[in-house]
Length: 290
Image (cartoon, rainbow, N blue to C red; front, top):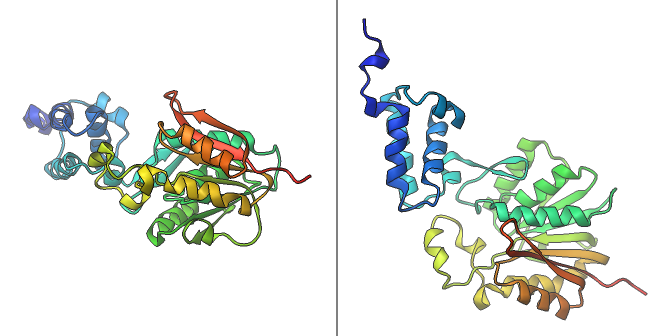
């Protein structure tokens, strides 16, 4: 007697479904095969390895329908992270939605640079300005439980996502404050301030592929430089002598970032490169008191 699998059309099995979906995503994604696999894994509640090992397995009509809906949303430009509700960053699994930017691997450079500058033992106070999903603050806090991190954002929705992630990860050394840049900080100075601010220019052609992410977290005035300048101008007043400021920026903004940090009195200014060898994080320290 034939089994249910034997009676299932080959077009309704995992391998064929993934092949069709991958072809449909080629125009909207640089990683169509990966996207299709992640979305089907999400629908089936299985790891991606399951898809490769069970390519001949049938997919139920309900799961096929759910998968097709996600593929159509991806074709409209919606990020995979929003569709599955999470994104891996550093060693963490973070919840994300349309209230926050999707954390990028390039931003891990900022975490690496920050950790390398911290003293071997705390207590150390760190502020993450414009925290979004909390990716930077939570990555640092997870690596250094002896440090106290304050994560701020002007968006209540973004802070809600970041707080949820901190609670889910069980990180008790992170506090949250709502406000625009330095306005969210108290009087006590910090040993380090980190930020991945908006740095994309209004007319940047890459924005056409980022229509689903919050524009206010991407775009800055003055050709993408206004937030970088504002942070460099005001950070020293909130740092201890010898405290560090670290700013993520676009690969063509390294010279500007070094210039503006030098202009506002920072020393030991340098730019660190991301994994692709592109200028990504510029940092400097406030001057020590004599």
